[in-house]
Image (cartoon, rainbow, N blue to C red):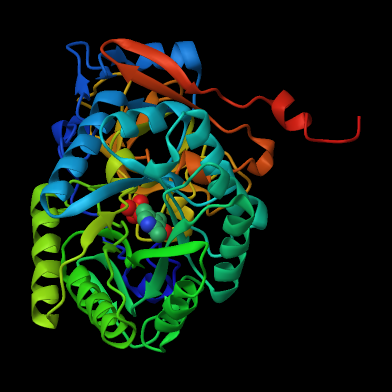
Length: 471
Ligand SMILES: *Cc1c(COP(=O)(O)O)cnc(C)c1O
């Protein structure tokens, strides 16, 4: 069973759908599907790709490859759309999930467009603080927050700390008491729903590390303990059900269960749940065939689902909150690689596959190796009318599983020195990057209105050697 971002029970759903048959036309292999590429992507008359009004060849020359390119206009427009659509659907706050990708510039952009930020470590909190994001716009997650992280969050006035265990109730209460504040907290409930793309799985219990079980009475017990502690104030419940979700069906089951939980808490303890945070997981198109619900539809459907569940339960509808990550930053990013080697390999059934090696790989995009993720790749430095060939885009690491795009059709005249662009790599690529093989992590370049500038600089071997205590 393959691992899957929505959790282990989704491993079986990872499809091997990428077709190795049915050769597309040369035009199709050159085209930039608007649902997959960031909103300012285009091909200029010479055939080279531009993004944010900047020629990708100029980006490669100035900043080197591999490099992540972040389309500021695309990211800002998606942040704005999420803030508007989910507010309209009843959300009091939409947080950007920082783990997808965070830098000071990105923290500024999402906050300026109306989003709060969900951080899940002291490091992510430090970036948000450096960007000057006020504490009340922040929410902190984590199933094992250190005392240091809890203290830092409380000192900065983080608006919501999401409680993930019984131990944490005591830890947050102690830190808040020491600081002389009353800390607003939420309780993370696991409701037995795991959603991904067009499927969801609903069970009574969840075999995973996050949150407290709704079914077992643990959430009610946590609420009881929090109510007794003067340094804590409960603002609501939290539930996050998965990732890369294309429709609202999983949210329907989850919302029903959290609302039932809120009703039990009210009936038994007289405590009203003011806020319901339904997490993130809204999906994006990695391939042209991916069809996530559009943003306003998804928001409206979830809003109606919760309103109906509350009406059925006879409780007041709480304010909603959401935490999209991938949906804000994923489509805004692309990775530019330079082709190094092109190696045709004869397959058993007579077909040829061409291994195209690029100057990065699993150190800048682990999702293909980890989840069997699919990506769209294009020749970016020029266009081509050459007959397409079946390729596998691979990295430079010492691992045969070091694959960037498992099955891709690329022009048959592809050659060393060509630039390839991989779409929708803004989320969970740079943020999950490693230094495997002592390869420095790529930089991130922002593009906007014809200008390119560094957001995160590329690491150097000197940076890596600087960690080694011996000379
Ligand atoms: C990962 C995560 C998110 C964001 O998920 P996306 O799929 O990027 O939208 C939000 N909330 C929680 C608790 C998460 O773990």
